Length: 135
Image (tube, rainbow, N blue to C red; front, side, top):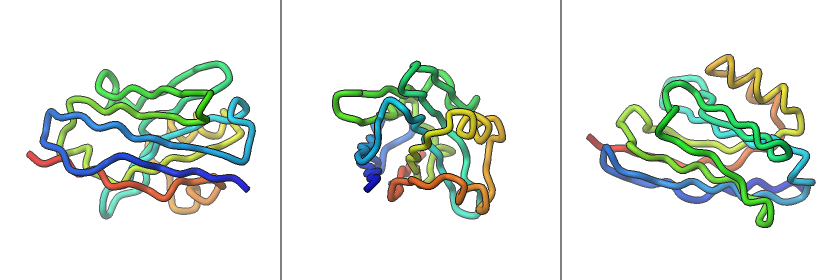
């Protein structure tokens, strides 16, 4: 059974830092691409960052480039999202997704945001974690 379990998040002041974790099980970690999305109230789910575990390729949305860092610990089957210099605009529920198709994840990242229907194209999602950045 595939498991995607998130941890981290919470409330932080603008300029602060948080780290999100995405622990996975039930599949060959190296064969997957792990992505972070976020969804603010009333908005579509937005691609934030992703990493192809096998080749280490990473992608960052322009809005987080230079502030967020994605990394993987293959020994723990876990991906991390280190978020620095947080802004109130980063406030959202953050979701981790595990997908075997690197091209699908990269295409979703290039779209910027994905529709409710496109969300269903990805089978394995974490439970979501709230990040609130106060001004």
